[in-house]
Structures are given as structure tokens and as C-alpha cells.
Image (tube, rainbow, N blue to C red):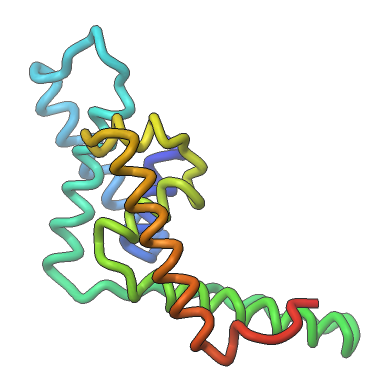
Length: 157
């Protein structure tokens, strides 16, 4: 399940850990299939199992997220643009890391999983207004963190 992998990857920061988490969550879902309400969509139910498993794994170790670096050797201008892009990507990753778990999750669901407010609200079991206010606060904290980060300021080219 591609969406599950993306969620697990964003929470765990590792492709191998995300694959393992998806497999374990699928096994847990299979063992718990008697508790699934077939009249409701499957993904929100599976998402909660996957999310809880990922949070259990995070609690067992310190979370680390790495931003992949892609070396480019085409020209000086291209290399410089790539360097600026990589620095800005690392700055954004650092800003996301400064968020609380609830704010980080909202940002990741909205911007990396591209879910609607309504879908996020359903997944988290909270009102749409709560999703909107958490996202507003998370974006504000990220803006503040990025404004202080020298790797993010300057011309993005």
C-alpha cells in the first residue's frame, strides 16, 4: 500500500523501517480483522494501526530523519542550484523536526500525503476545525524556525 509506506516513511525516516512497519501493521490488521467495520472505509482503520505501530517504534528509539543528497555534476550553475535546493530541503526537514508530534503529523499528512482536511480529520478522529488550527500553528512555527535558519534564507533560484 503506497499511501501506508509514505506515512511510515515520513514518521520513521527510513525506507527499510517504513517497509518493516507496513508489513507489521498489515499483520496486525490481519490479526484484528474481526474488529474491522466493513461499512466504513478500510484505509482510516489501517492508518491508525500503522500510525500506532510507527509511534511505538519511535518511542523505542530516537527519531532521525535524513534528507537524501543527490550529487549533480552538470555545470557550475546547475550544481549551485542543486546545493541551494539541498540546503533548503535540509532546513525544512530541521524545521519539521522542531514541531510537536501532533503538529508534525498534521504537516506530513497535509503536505507529504496530500490529504484533504476532511480526510485528515477522519484519520485522526478530530473535527476539521482542529485540523485547520493545528496546521495553522504548525506552519507558523515552521515559518519562525525557517526565518532563523541561514540555510533557508536567500534566493531560492
